[in-house]
Image (cartoon, rainbow, N blue to C red; front, top):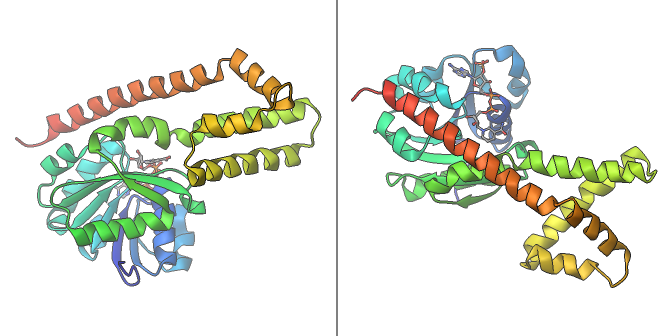
Amino acid sequence: MVALESLKVAVIGAGTIGSALARELALAGCEVRATRRRLDRVRDLEELGVHLTSDNVEAVGGADVVFVVLKPHKVVPVLQAVGAALEGKLAVSLAAALDLALLRQAFPGVRWIRAMSNTAIPVRQAFTMYAPSPEVTERDLAVAQAVFGLLGTYEEVEDGYMDALTAMAGSGPAYIYTMLEALIYGGLRVGLPRDLTLRAAAHTAIGASRLLLSSGEHPAVLRDQVVTPGGVTIEGIFALEEGQIRTAFMNAVKAATEKSLVLAEETRRKIRDDLPE
Ligand SMILES: NC(=O)c1ccc[n+]([C@@H]2O[C@H](COP(=O)([O-])OP(=O)(O)OC[C@H]3O[C@@H](n4cnc5c(N)ncnc54)[C@H](OP(=O)(O)O)[C@@H]3O)[C@@H](O)[C@H]2O)c1
């Protein structure tokens, strides 16, 4: 286990994901420098001891590990401006679309890990997927895993899966919220109180997910356990099937994946065109 206390971390791009990451790092005792241009938007991080600056060179220069949490098109120009300060460091990119081949081509002296997390970081329930480049050491991996562990659970995946995972799991909270909203509206439709319906829907989703993970069973098996002959649940299931809910979810992931692949390809091509030969 890596001790995170006093690890020096730079978070480049303290936006939605970056500021949530900086917060967890600071709470874990890391020495955090977080950057963005509009620092007034994240002043609350200072109360946790995060050093805020708009100077990316200063932040990277003083860091053992650099987290890059910029919009994809900004990563290369912003890091090129950082220059030599990044050389020889472990850097974790959370930017969508930028694969390891591109990151290594643009910054060959850096030990890269590509990662994708989600918005559940503030409640430490994010699912972070990561792919290390061959240069990454055992110690680098241990450091990155210790940080990902602060955010929730994590899993190493092949870089080639990342664009599809962006569409399925990165965008996943949006699908789950859509499902939860529909469940809540179902409750309202039959006259249940608004707040109670929201809690009932959310806790049911948490409980069902936990049971799925701990049982190791397929969801179809767990669902079947709830369905009694001529009972209540089968009526609900029948209505869901009539609404083709499973087809809708599968189509959603396919459509989002196709978009993710097109956008990623476009982003990489544009960036490659601007790279020196
Ligand atoms: N949101 C998600 O659910 C999610 C999930 C997984 C991964 N991601 C990935 O994480 C990355 C960040 O996403 P996000 O949603 O957190 O975006 P975001 O809120 O826009 O954060 C990006 C931050 O970068 C800062 N920035 C821009 N130029 C900068 C510069 N020159 N130096 C330092 N900071 C600079 C911006 O702040 P200023 O304008 O104040 O500089 C902004 O706050 C993206 O690549 C995205 O693909 C997002």
